[in-house]
Length: 212
Image (cartoon, rainbow, N blue to C red; front, side, top):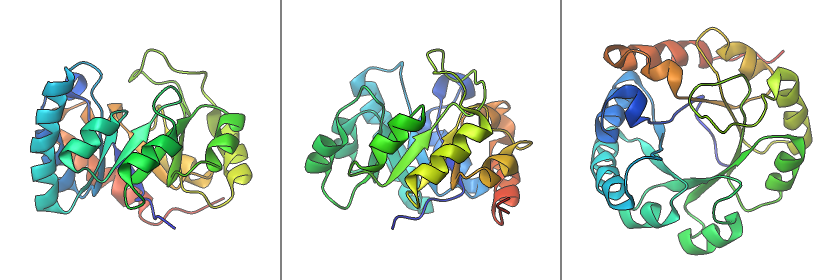
């Protein structure tokens, strides 16, 4: 079974003020080894060109790169996989295009979606938002820690990423509630000069999580 790292950074050019490639470099310098490239604002061509640059940096550091939404970009830049939303390409179609070796993740926002997603040919599920978040404007209602625990119990050992409002302060509580990995955007990019240090702070908290 695919093993998720405890920290799952997601890039954000608007919030960080940095290109994806530089974000990957700084995240990797802090110890991150699994990064999702997410870009809702650039044109497909701009995103693909920047993803190519980010892939070059990632290979230097041994970082796996997941592309948000865009199966075509993931194929073009030979990324390690793709992360799909509920309205994106169906996971079975993505698997046919990407092959068995690529990683596929799927976003879910409630218990039923998670149960349904666990039956799909995906390597991990993401659940969120756990808490209120400012990173996305079209989010579903927060599921909270109790909702996270319910999903954990329902999906068995399927790797589970928690996303939405996660900070250094609440990271351990989220892991204890059942998450295998923490997807983080805002907390990593509040200060672009501290990205590597913030990654280290998260990793220090999540290396030896204690499940309650």
